[in-house]
Amino acid sequence: MRIESYLDMGSTLGVSGLFSVAGSFGRIYVTTPDTKTEKDNKTIYEYTNGKVKLIAEFTKHKNGAVIRRDTLENLTDDPMTINQLFSRFRIAGSNYEVYTQFNAWLHESNGAWQRLVTQVTSGSDGIRTCDAAAPIMALHNTDTGANYVFHAIPNGQWKMVAKKHCIQEKELVTVDIGLEDSCLALVADPHETIKFPEIIFFSAKSKVDLDAYKLHEVINQLYPRKNLPVYYNSWLHCFDKLDIDDLFNQIDTAADMGFEAFMIDAGWFGDGANWAGCVGDWRENMTSGPAGRLIDISNRVRERGMIFGLWFEPERAGWLCKAIKEHPEHYFGGWALNFADKGARERMFNIISEQIEKYHIGWVKFDFNATMPYDPFGNAFYRYMQGQREFITRLRERFPDLYISNCASGGQRMDLSIADISDSYWLSDNQSPVDGVRIIKDTLKRMPSSMIDRWNVQMYCDGFPCYDGGKRGKMININDGVWNTVIGINDSFCEEFVKGGPLGMSCDLAAFPDNYKERWKSVILQYKLERDFYKNASARILVEGDDMTVLEYFDTALDKCVIQIFTKASYANDIILYPMVDEDAIYFVGEEEISGIDIAEDGIYVNGLATYSCKVVTLTKKK
Image (cartoon, rainbow, N blue to C red; front, side, top):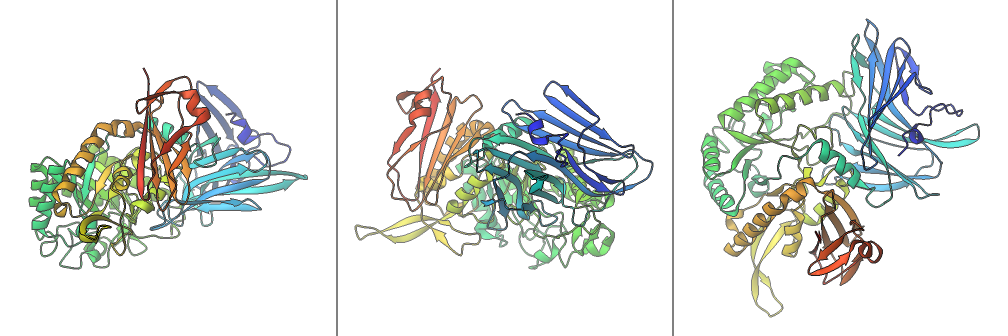
């Protein structure tokens, strides 16, 4: 990839391809930088006007992806205000479609293409980085078929704009990516350096999955996963009704089935039955929930060889929270902990650390169930996210083995901004495996598979009628976020659905029939044998249809490829697939040997598809 093809600096059309920056120092469009430095796989452009220094650093990955890191430095001895902070790209041509993703509770990563007529704008709605939109934008040239993909790594409330221009009777398209600027008044201290959101961009051959494997390879190399655990969460089994005897049964069953971690979700804290109003006071509920026996739960979990986990929501305070009355200076908007404030961070760090040590916690789930549309300090939550990073980084330093999951009313903070200091992301509050396949498929376009939690949520029911007139028991799965609707699917569907990332379950394990306990014990055992592959795997979307989704996982050398064919209400019996393979190799597909070039040209024929099932095909390179 030629970086200059995205920048086109020195253009006579008068639209810069490097920055769009404005503030108390004036407005800057960098047409020609002062210096260009190339070293190894990096290209660095630098510009200064005596007041500010702007640097754009481009790092090339071997697969063609480029990481762009821009900074603005205040060169003066006085504070300056920044009102706009965009990295800019110029794209040749003018006839485009634009892909963006809507993102909301129960509608995570919901993407679509639209024609670029004037401009398309996407951005987060506030304090949570994936409120209303996910930080991805792609352009498809309808004349040439070329695709250009941009991934923003948020460091505040972000914005992405694709705009069509007509200048001197010439048409062109710019893409601006940076902080939300509608209310931006970010003050840079004397000689302070402000970071733009990082951007990963590349050209793509596929309009279906946007060559997302390139992003996966970059992120897996930069931020490798430590582990893909098998874990249990209490929430969708009992919500906040934490019965001790029942939890002990779940703990013992989980340990017998091979689980490695066990979490108590919301409801363990507070004062009496109204725990939700006490969010922010992270003290064990002594009269409701665990009723003073949380340490007994932790001890039992650890005695059974599992890691103990606990749910927190450090960024929010409920209406009964004592801390907000004792330390009002640590909160803003009436409920939000001000992570930009050192005193607020320090107090919350000490509180969370105390609970980790007291209950021997090895896994935390950080949730965030509220939103705020604009930063009242004018920083587009830049300072807030700086503080959040420092908070998590300090926890990492103090508790290096701590496993951290992130959630925000489902997936409204599911992005790459803390991929280096967080372990995984809660997929969605919609735990339907059918909808989950769709969410995973679309989230793979902007995140590697190994970072996305999978959750199996099901229960056993008696008395389903059979064709022979008899009755039988059946496992049914949740089909939403609160058990209002359920769905019956083939075992293969939910067993394959949970592969590819951390494997979780949140249901009444103790009530499973013995044969299903043994079945899942076998699934978990097999997953443990395969998880090193999934930990480092990239993914492609081979088919995304209304009734069929086909995913392919593969390692960097293409030594192994695993294809999952998820079918819904489809009556197709067979399909020909074209997976990514090494065309110079020979592969075993079952017991059959097929050359990589034949697979690339003729595909792989797969039959025996069934409704609401998953068929798996594994390709292994012949050594």
